[in-house]
Amino acid sequence: MGKRLYVIAGEASGDLHGANLVRALLQHADGEQLEVRAWGGDRMQAAGAHVVKHYRDLAFMGFTQVLMNLRTILRNIRACKEDILRFRPDAIILIDYPGFNLRIAEFAHGQGIKVFYYISPQVWAWKAGRAKTIKRVVDRMFVILPFEKDWYARHGMEVEFVGHPLLDAIGADELRAEGPDAPADARPVVALLPGSRLQEIRRMLPAMLAMVPHFPDHRFVVAAAPAVPDELYRALLGAVPAELAKDRTYGLLRQARAALVTSGTATLETALIGTPEAVCYSGGALNIWLAKRFIKVPFISLVNLIMGRQVVRELIQGEMKPAVLRAELQRLLTDEAYIRRMQADLGELRRKLGGPGASAHVADQVWKSLRETPGGGRPGG
Image 1 (cartoon, rainbow, N blue to C red):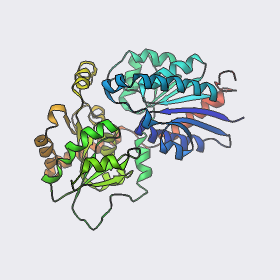
Image 2: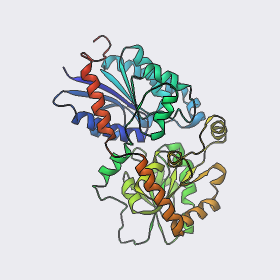
Image 3: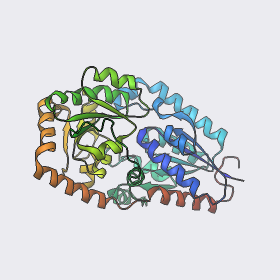
Image 4: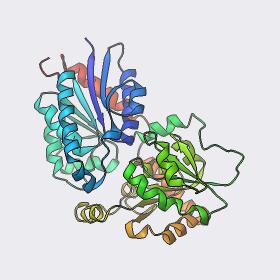
């Protein structure tokens, strides 16, 4: 009898890492049958998972969006629990997405299903009290940031640092030569990464596009998220002479001279590729006020958090003014000493995150655990 796994990722970055993990799990099957059912996206589906719910229906960002969509979120949680009971998995693998996944972890634990958590929620930034819940309901936690192992140890939980899966994703992508079109245009490229959620794209992209008229000697290319309709980008671009690169972000970043990046996983992707960047974020007034009250870290970007100091400039809320953004982009494009210092820091960041192989290591550990437990953790099995 084969094994069954249920994997849950609630956003684009989780879909990317989930896809790499699903591929690794199938590669480590050693002839055993494996059925993977998932909440995720197109990448996980292509990797071999049967995706029953797409993350585009789950990505509610910020406190106000969550409150406005609370009924939908609770309905999704209930539907997920019911689907898990019907599927009867041997184990569940949760990928980040804490508001949803910690509820599912508690439910699965109560059902006697083994719970793996891959990519820790950022409980070290806020809601440190969640560490007690994680310790109680999660069987194995695999973390991807070096400081997380010590943080959990201080909270009485042993976790495993596996390195960052972006190193795998970027390494695999380097085998493909992809980037924006129109190679006859020799102007240097500026990459614009406005995020992957509809709300943040609508808020961030216009501010980024406002830079285009000030740098006529550069090509501006927008990294379009795969799950977002092109029509949204076209409407926001209007008559602005910028291009779209659909689902080709890594190739675009390798070609870019500099990048303006919305805060999130993309800031780390940009850093690991080695592209000089500025981190941008502007949110609703209520969300920002609540974040300042509850978030307990000195930086917003993973780049600076991992390094423990400012490596890339963070233009947050009040600093997201056109004049400030323009000055920072000018510096990223022309200040050679600034560029060299940032690129040296980004090289150090890459070394801190360890080598590739996170997905393969997690897959190996999951399979070992499944094979050590005859009959798995299926309820009623």
